[in-house]
Image (cartoon, rainbow, N blue to C red; front, side, top):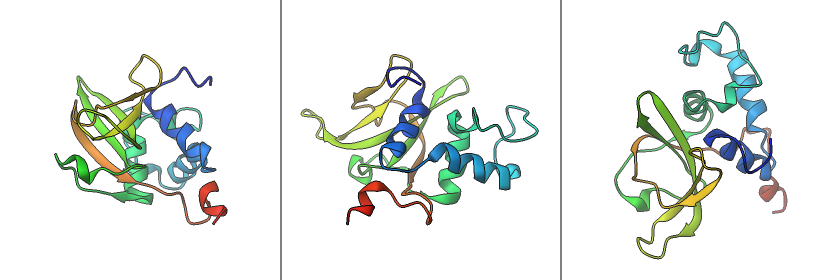
Length: 151
């Protein structure tokens, strides 16, 4: 999919691919092995490698299972570059973004890379919606991110 299109989850998938982690594959494999642990709201009978990684609730389960669930706070300093944040946008809509290592001039908070329908954006939106999840994920033990390979 072109980098200027897609949904919020595509930004997360792209960020992990950039460091050598195939999150799409990892989510699919975990869902195939542990399908019962994932949400049933889509009434699927089995995992679908083409869409499952593009659903925020599925990523929330995956990051909880394979990464680290962190506290949800109203303190910006608790959110570090690389952290993933999920939000409730209302009306059953969820959203995800990644904290990056660039701060805003005004609030001095780390910015978020996300896509809420207008293409990829780098914005100060951490507290714009109700936070429903805060995660940290560095890849599965057998997948070494590119940045770690150079150490």
